Image 1: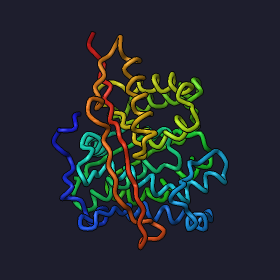
Image 2: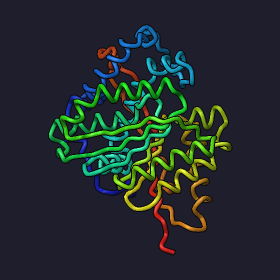
Image 3: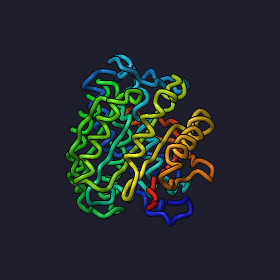
Image 4: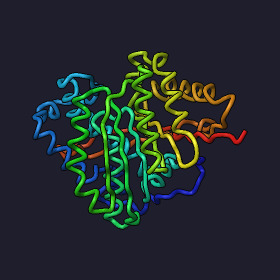
Length: 321
C-alpha cells in the first residue's frame, strides 16, 4: 500500500456537500453535523462552543467538565481531520485514503477506534461513507460493521454512544449497519489492553476485514510523557492487528510533536517489536503524509477553521518463516 498506488476515490467525484473544490473548504456530512448539534443542545455546552480559543484547543480529560469542553470546542475539528484524511481532496495521502475506502466499501468490517474519545474518527468515517453512497460516488453495497470504541473517559464514551444512535438511521439508509460497544481502555494497563484485544479477536471471527484507527493520541503520549508506559501495550495491540485483511491507520494533527517525535518513535517501536518474527510493510521511507484545509464549523456554518493531519498507514504483514 504505497503512496503511488492508484487512488480508489477520485477527488473530482467528491460531492460539494462534503468538499467545495472552488473554495477548497470541507463540510462535515450533514447527518454528522445534525447529530453533533443535537447533542450540544441536549447537554448544554453551546456556550463553550461559542467561546472556543482556536490557539489553545482542549485535549479532553476524565471529568464531565473536561469532556464537555473538548466536545464543544474540538470534536468538530477531530471529525474534520478524519474526513480530510479519508477524502484526501488534495491527493496528499493516497495510501491512507485507500485504506479507509477499501475498508468501508462493503462486506463485513471489524473497526476498532482506540482511543475513541467521543467517536470523532470512527463516526466521521462512517458518516462520510454514507454521504458518498448517497451521492452515488460509492456503491451501496451492504456493509456490516462491528465497532469497538475504546476510551478511558466514561463521559466521552456516553457521547460516542449517543452520537451513533443519532447517526444510525442515515447509515442504515445507505446499507451501513453498525453494532457497537464502547469500552473502558487504559493503554498503560496491560490487563485492560488484553481485554480490548480479546474483544477485537472475537469481533474479527465474524468480521474478517479489520481496521484499527488510532487518532489524536499525541497529547497523551507526548505531552503527558506516557510513551514508555504505553509502549508494551501498543506493541501487543499492533501484533493482534497484524495479518491479511488488516490495516492500522494512525492520524494526528499536523504538528511537530507528531511528525518529528511521535511517528519516528512509533516506527522504531514497530520495527523492534517485529524484527525477529514478521515482515512489516508500512509507509516509513517517504515523508509522513500531511495535509490541511479549512472546514465549516457545524454550529456556525458561516465560519471556518483550519484543520490538518499527519497520517501513517501501517500494514503488518506476517512473514511465512
